[in-house]
Image (cartoon, rainbow over all chains, first blue to last red; front, side, top):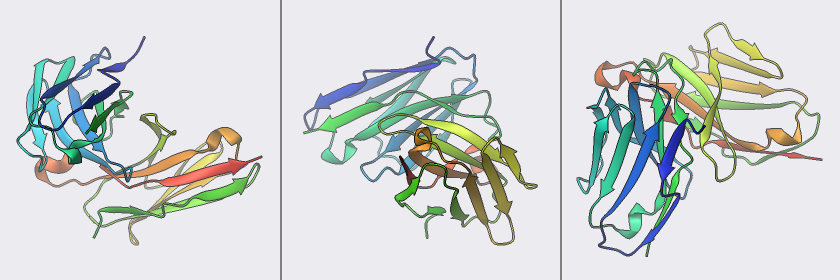
Length: 114
Length: 113
């Protein structure tokens, strides 16, 4: 059973479009995250939710809007896609927001904006 | 200045070799440290946490030097399967950011037969 799953795995779209990425975890964790890994392999946190509430919102354009319908899901919607949004987006979850708890990552969504 | 800095490598080592990676962190208030491993085109996975007293897990040894603000990872008897990118991670403990992990860019290791 996949612990943290993301869909789609690959997403190719044109500039200006709106797209969503979905994430689900079946670990019973309280905290979920979205990370962006750019072409230089730099992994940077974007958002974190704890029990469906936003707790981290890094300096991310407001074209990016996360939504957590329940503890097990954290979706990411992106409006007006730009070339610079091309990256791999990883969802992750952890037992709680305590940094000592391991973060489990999903397989990633490779977004290409043309 | 980057918060977590690592030598990107690549480190090309023969099987059986011992290899060491270092990483420095800029936030002296950081309390939690980790090494994650990321295989090519895969997600990061926790390799080991780094404790103040140092810790060992099989062929892997992690050390923390708070005075110099660096973390190290030693891999003994390298295997082909150790080929991956190793990500150094620190967690600053300052208010709302205390649960935020900061990743280095990673050090790429290639173990050669």
